[in-house]
Image 1 (cartoon, helix red, strand yellow):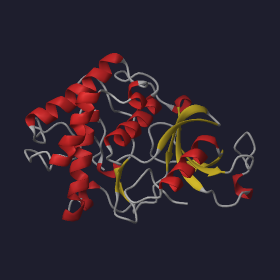
Image 2: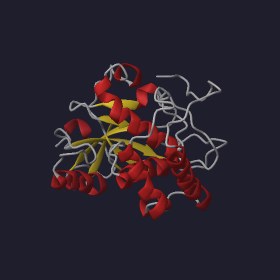
Image 3: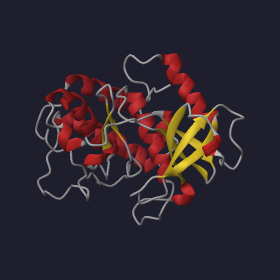
Image 4: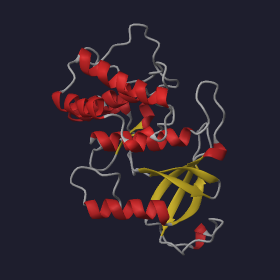
Length: 259
């Protein structure tokens, strides 16, 4: 079963089954992801009752039904400008995308695992040779890239590297590593500046208007403080007001490394 989030045309029942498995199935550690600044683990999800409580024994198990990326609170390095609990922002990013109907973040849930509470995101079977800069060369991806650009502006993404844009076998684009989002202060650092000064597409504007008028969705609001919630709506309101994607006149609002 390989349903990533709730992609257009995906069977809703299959999506619900994956979410139920991620929330309540047995979790087996498969390995630690390299090059991650915080402890990040590849895990397999199995039907309940399959895996020992300590998450070990993965070598003796059948192929997992779903693979996921587990980021426990215990594995986070403290940051001076973000509070502990970056995993909460991973979940909030998914909930924001879900509420907007943008399907830009893979299915992400709160989950208790071998190292305690954290986020669990469905693993994307991506072509890891591709990233933002290669995808930009294909104009067919531009509508999805504009949507991700708008998402990052509203979510105040501070770390949208090129390698954090994945493409799956259906050419659907996913934004991963969303822990550095939702700060109340301007923190936008992204590689997606190529649409600067372009008009905001009407369909994205309509979705953002719902956020501005209806308020921050409960699944997001419960993981942010009041100032962050209000800043989220303010950014959406500002993007709607200008009606155009912003530019970076400083030339410094990029993450490092770029990929």
